[in-house]
Length: 40
Image (cartoon, rainbow, N blue to C red; front, side, top):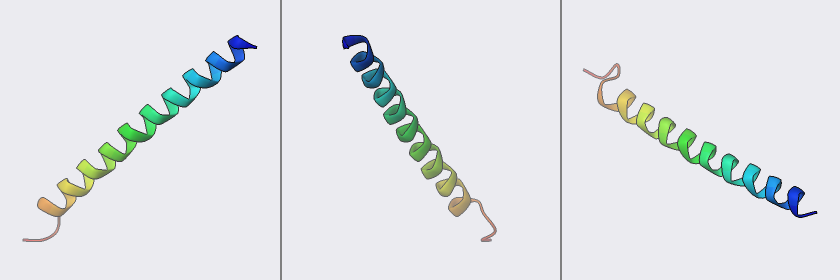
């Protein structure tokens, strides 16, 4: 029972870290596009 709980906890933390990194990457990409995009 505790093994399943720890596995779920590990999975949740990994998912949270992935979503945070993904949002950071999206934000940096947006900043790059707005700063040096097609605008002169």
